[in-house]
Amino acid sequence: MTPRLHLPLGMIALLAIATSAPALGQAPALRATVEGAVQRPGVHEFPAGSRLADAVLAAMPDPRAYPLGAALLRRDAEITQTRARAGLLYDLQALQSHAQTADEVAAAAARLRQWLAGLPVTGRVPNRLEPRALEADLRENRPLADGDRFLYPLRTDSIRVVGLVAQACELEHVPLRDAKAYLRDCPPAPVADRDWLYVIQPDGHVERLGIAAWNRSASHPLAPGAVLYVPLSERELRDIDAGFNAALADFIATQPLPAAGAAR
Image (cartoon, rainbow, N blue to C red; front, side, top):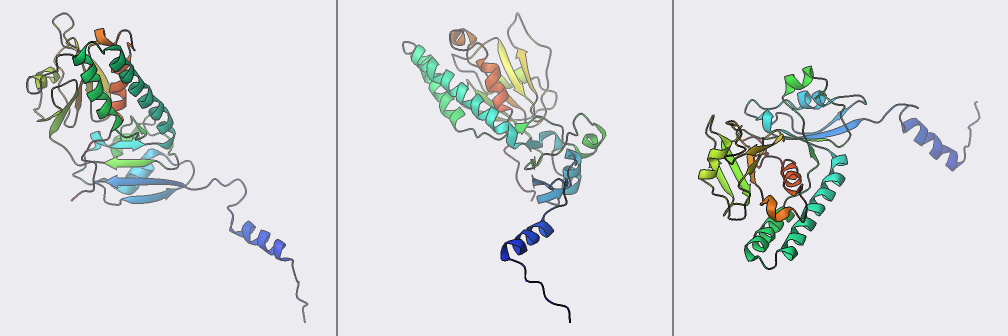
């Protein structure tokens, strides 16, 4: 009869941990969440070394999804964006104080500050997320990071105009219509900059367009879901932060399309 070995409880616990732990040198699995118009939403696990295309193809975007407006949200981008928003809010507060004798400018800064404070920090980073194009382009098909989130919206048929306008507008997208032409339906406020307009395409790409006679850009059509940011007058900002409008446009680009919900 074989004698039984009586091991100390501490050694038994160590053996249990050792047998349940991954092999030495084996990297833990990566977890990514896919939401919106996809056929397999939810949390997916992938081996170390996986890339963005692996998560996108596993989730199977719905045929009605709008890949141009899809968003990649990363945890490591949230700290930078939190600081960026804090800096923008500080600049607007400084502008309010600086413009106390100019009621119109102070009121516009206050409205813009209230609107900006309501925008969340998302961690969105620009990246093409059309499944097959992503798979074929190694520059866009970056390594997957643990905690990545992918949002796939349904296609939208609208354009939003925000910033220094009398009231934020949501307008119907018109194919080939020039970006500047949308301002006819959503007029800028008196303290808006009359020389420049910022375009945020649905993939997060930001462009500055000249809209005055001296700097007029060529006709610039928009993709459905684009956002137009009508900036504050750069003359009012010269003593605060000359790069404010560009920084705010970049922050607006971190906001996913509002339609990023589950497919119906």
